[in-house]
Amino acid sequence: MFRRDLLLTMLATAPFRWFRPWVRPTLESPGTKEANAALIYQKALGWSKGLSLEDLERLRKAATIPIDDPNVAALIQKAKLALEAIREAASIGVCRWQPENILNIDDLLKGRLDFSNLNTIRVACLSARQLAKLHRGRDALDDEFAGLTLAHRIGKGGLHMARVLECGGEASVFQTLGRILPDLDRATLDDLSRRLELLPPPEPASAMIGPESRFILGHLRSKLGAIGPIIEDNQWSEIGFDAEDAATLKRLTGGDRARLLAHLGATGPAFDELARRLDLPRPDCRASLDQFAKTEQSSQPIVAGLVESAWGVRHVADRMLALRSMLRAGLVLVRDGEPAFLKIPDPYGTGAFALERRGKCTLIRSSLVDEGKPEVSLEVGEAA
Figure (cartoon, rainbow, N blue to C red):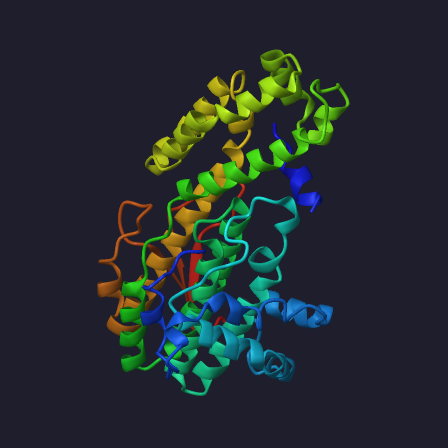
């Protein structure tokens, strides 16, 4: 298998005109419409670096930590400039990250791919919970959808890592929205419903294959450019291959660099087929991917080695769709009652979502399951 772990340890894009309706528009100067939101995000991204371990733990529990904790209020105050920046950026329809395409390993874990960016989204969730308690529901929604906008701009058309960050950010936003639903008045619930309807569907998992394949092939070509015409035995691991894939590629190319470069250039159809299978209906997808990995391992080991990561992104995309549907169902539950809630189908089940009353809190569960991964659920209201 191609050693993605090696890449990690060595270490959207186009205008989104559908972002703007998620947040209340701000007054714009004549040049604002041409502004680049990515430049404004620079004021916010990385703000959490240097925070204490205690504050970082508070951010990790943004959806559940008691909002009346004085330390939480102080943390929100520390993030004031970052919150202002993501609200401003969310009102701008153009977001061009630099670099637009991640083709260099040195760009991983930086900029929009820095995992600390999740803390900016999480503090927006904390701020929203605080505002909801103060009966400032629309302001709370603005913070939540500013965080959601950032999450989607990180993930749109991105690598596997970008999609994971997107899902983490969106999960924090939707979990927080679920918890504040009972604090919102009817008009704000209607506003939330409108904003949710404006959301585009989650980008399909297959959208990751193009950027990821370009990144992997670019990395390999860069490594091959630094070695001689014949790949020595000890150089295969330095390039990024484990022993099994190295043996397969040596058999296919004889260890000749030119033949390996030609092999890389011929991987396009296999990557396309992987993308096609990744978007099959969920009951068929896993089996089809396993069959692809088995049949392609002997001739396309680089592509076959991407199967597990691709399945992970498929689960991420499905999870985001389930969370969106559960939030809509939770909104209907709070606003219109349980009979209306039961009319909303679980996209991964055969009927409505499961419902469990837990005192002041209600747990909504989806039938979406994946072995080894936690259940997909949403709490409506505060547990305590």
